[in-house]
View 1: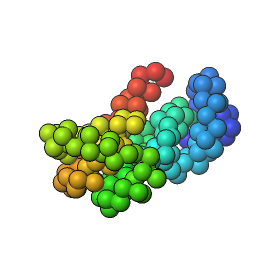
View 2: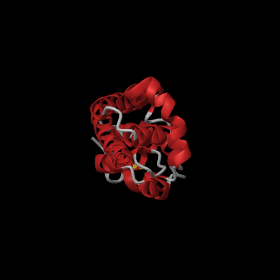
View 3: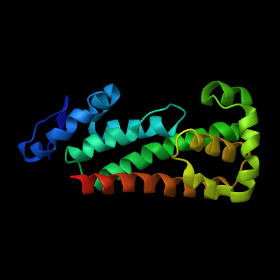
View 4: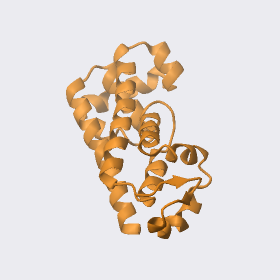
Length: 175
């Protein structure tokens, strides 16, 4: 299996994917992280799953286009993203609003505004944890109000796994 260095494919068997690499040149961090392969994908997944805005899908796409095994990519991205989500959940679970406002940039009003929806849907709301902006607020709220941590983690895992599986399947259809 080949690897990618500065968007130049090293293994000739994967040269048909070289045409896709130009679409990812503008992602500085993608270039950096994809050089570290699955470790870079894990880190990208963690960053995008935590309070930092990051696009792990771009890193995963580059690795898939480079010929890295899709099941490995799905597992590693899900694990990293899950760890980031758990970090967000427990930041909320600690319940220190000054930390939540400082690090997650979420105001107390937003947390309390989402409470009726969290009461209505419970831990099932964690299925949407991968959605930008609202996913972080949902997970923070689930942690802050201590709504069934084990079930919240289970539904968060299912949502994140489904997202990466769909991405891998989409990339397979494109190439």
